[in-house]
Length: 71
Image (cartoon, rainbow, N blue to C red):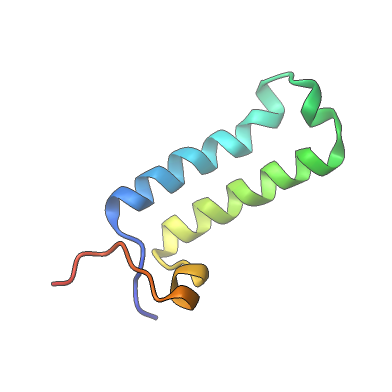
């Protein structure tokens, strides 16, 4: 598998992913009382963290994008 997620992109994905995973539990927002928003936040956050860890984003591959520096 070829890497297509660069370091700045990975950092942003990890930060946003962690925020999305923790937000439903810690925020107390009424929005997350709805199971759809609660689950969506967890799933999107988990996907962002997973793509940052493996350094591969399937959507980037489909569209031919890459944020990695060519060495």
